[in-house]
Amino acid sequence: MHFRLQKLSLVIVTLVLAACQSAQKVSDPAQLVQSLQQTLPQPADAGTPAPANYLSEQDAVLSALAQNPGFKAQLSDLNLANADIDQASQLANPSLFYAFGAANKPYRYAIEFPIEALWLRPIRTRQMQYQAQATQYQLLQAGFNLIRDTRVAYAQAVIAMEKQARLQQALQLNQAIADLVKKREQLGDISTQEVLLAENEALLSGRDAQLASLDSRLAQTQLMHLIGQAETSKHLALSDALIPACSTVDIAQLKTQALSSRPDILAAEAAVAATRQKRQLTGLNWLNAAVIADATSGETSGHTLAPAIRGSLPLFNQNQAQISRADAELVKAQQTLAAAKVQASLELHSAHLKYQRDCLEWRQLHEQLQPNLAQTQRAAEQAYQHGEIAYLNVLESSKRFIALQLRETQLKADLVGSWSELMRSSSHSPQQQTR
Image 1 (cartoon, helix red, strand yellow):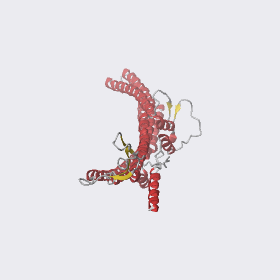
Image 2: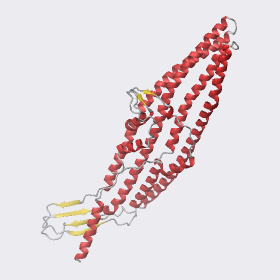
Image 3: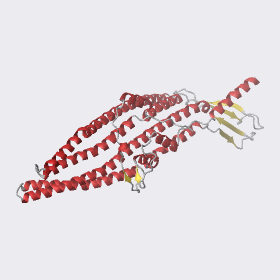
Image 4: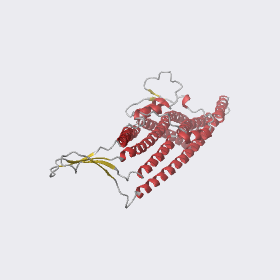
């Protein structure tokens, strides 16, 4: 009998010690931001000191990860998730019942401890850990989204300044054409209607230049607010190294990598695992078992404790409603996981096709259109020098060339956007550190 009591005591002590072990937590906000920073490619000019008051694309991304107000607010969910793990891993305190002034019984009390916590705590803890992992992966995906948005916003700001310069050139050219047309009208070579058309073109170019100036300020304002530097003004520049090289992309490899390690998919998988733990917990937590050391009765001298046990009798229900709900939540989580994989595949294929489209236009513009128009412009200038054509034809040729340069400017932004989206769609989760 004594041996059995010792063995029972050893089992109880083992369960209590196991229950008191600290639970493993997820990364804190600083660690998650650091892991996102480590996924960024090293810039080609990393060893070159940046000029004063200069903001590179890499600096903009790093600033966004560290200072974007919306992302910082989302990162607070990590602290909440770790707090939920702490709460789930805590053991319930024993309860004490004490009665005063009982006749012939100076001490009447009972101590109650819910023993179900000893085997339900690990399940609760695992559930919270999986939920915390889902939160962590969701925030990783939000970080990749922020990186994409910052790169696109940076490119748009730089392109807006470049577009403003191109439209200023177009304005000067259209004004020169309008002046030349007026002189030809005075000589009687052309009609008043052609003069009005040329003047309208100059007015439209002036309007476009003014709007481009406002668009440039708007794009830079949006970028600086996105990276958490709303009160700062810096010069932006998009180096040639940041323009995607239009290299061949193995879509099959990217898809395999994305479907196995994209943070939003990993978050959905963690949600499924958390729901399974909740289903297991729901099937057990209706017992409400507790052990009691009862000294409310017995000897009148006071402190004799009688062992007792308390629990629920499943006469009217066995928690079928909550179990059915947990089953439905598990099915929903599994369907959400399947939908996340389909969405990831769609985003990856769409981004890849857009990137191929922009690369095709980029190559065609540089290999065919620009050389042809440059040759046409040179031929027009030579013909004008030999007196074969009027100067107006030379200006019209230059106007077409500037229009093509404007398209090249916008295509830069499109390329950066499609490449950034492709990288986000194929993003993978970095190795996470746990505390």
